Length: 248
Length: 353
Ligand SMILES: Cc1ncc(C[n+]2csc(CCOP(=O)(O)OP(=O)(O)O)c2C)c(N)n1
Ligand code: SF4
Image 1 (cartoon, rainbow over the protein chains, first blue to last red):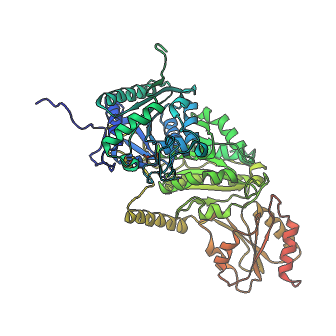
Image 2 (tube, each protein chain N blue to C red):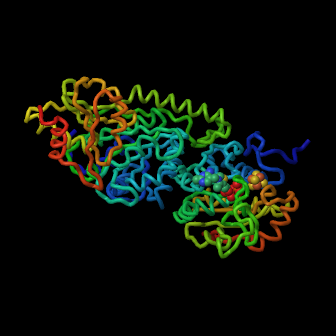
């Protein structure tokens, strides 16, 4: 019988620890499939963040380094500079990338570091129990924003993709989500395109993936998807913000 | 090989390259800027690379990545910069990665000043980052020793898979002295089968990590680390002693202050005083046992530092109350003079010789 679907070799056989309905799992699969399909899995070094994806080093079937909170882009820089032929990616949450590690991501992009970043934006700190993130929406409740995020107190949610797209060294910037099969296919396409930028030696690439945190948002997985579509997409519009012009 | 006149900081760079260091990640801070400047100039010539990071935090994390990928890698900084690096140093120690970190100390706390000091002794020997870890800490007293210890530092880092800190100060970084790059056996370069260089489809993935969520596993990891530190304590103690067995007073000092103490001792000897010196070269592991050689009726051990009293804690541990411990220190970038030390020794003698 023809095999129609099988688990990707890009992931190990370890079961993930993610909560039911959390889209981290889908994003892992898309990244892993892309590494395999592009033929770079065996020369990949992944950098795991601090956050719910901290154990990503157990899931991806390639060499991995675990980084301090927010520092993955700096660690990736060290790895890539030593072995430029390796494929190097970071996998980071919004607390990791958009708060404690903003300097590291901005400057990795700015140097045109030939690495790829998967940025999982779930508008909250998942691992530590639902505190406010820089990406938390206005009015959204979090354990450290019990009355809902107040702009006058903590500013407006930070739009990372738009910001990084202004940086010369960033060659590919796209925001996607994984709420429907069609969106999942688009996300996969973006991830592969982003990875190709590194493979072709063009510079820094990032895919921001709008993700859910049913556990800390306090919704069922299905409600969480609906909430994301209704509230996050309007503020964080999907689409490509930057890619190399044809022929360049 | 012929002797060349070199500034301490440049000698650090030359020694690192001699030891096979190919990668340097740093961020400018006085008084160690000649190190990144030297590396930015010389590394490309040997197929290596210098990257000026956006901060010390990024620099040390680049070191982490490069060390994990199997490279010989170094970073340098001075006190406030080393404080920022502590996060990464703790992770590097936890993940058991080899690297060399140079601290050319300046005065603190806070922004302090840019003059030499020895105020980071506690931070270097006790941690500074979180967790129960140790660095191998080496404290050179002249530019030649700086060169030798940097080269040896790379071998030790690889041997123990542990960060090595070269603890100097603004004085040693800035002074010029003749140095010789001695003929030596090629550096011991162990294979790094644990490094993340890509599986090539031939082996299981390598993971560089310091996270152990299971308490038993973390305890076991720490037990292993402690066993490694115990081995360092047994094998890596480095100390220079001078006439301690029959000394009436022993001076204990390291690095720059030890040099000054030697001048003071020469003066005192001319006047008939019997003064010895214990100069720890490794600050971790500390040469506690050397102090057992001092005779019981020694009048006292005088610790001299460019701080308000940090290494004296180790001296007291070594003496364990057997002999009185005294302290003389200057701080803020003030350097103790030989005359000040002479006076202090005479004070301890209490007039009699
Ligand atoms: C230096 C440091 N500060 C704080 C923490 C605690 N911490 C762990 S995960 C996390 C938030 C991660 O949130 P995010 O990056 O959004 O990822 P998510 O868990 O939502 O996937 C924090 C603050 C830490 N581990 N290290
Ligand atoms: S806490 Fe949230 S982000 Fe973390 S695994 Fe659970 S659902 Fe996913």
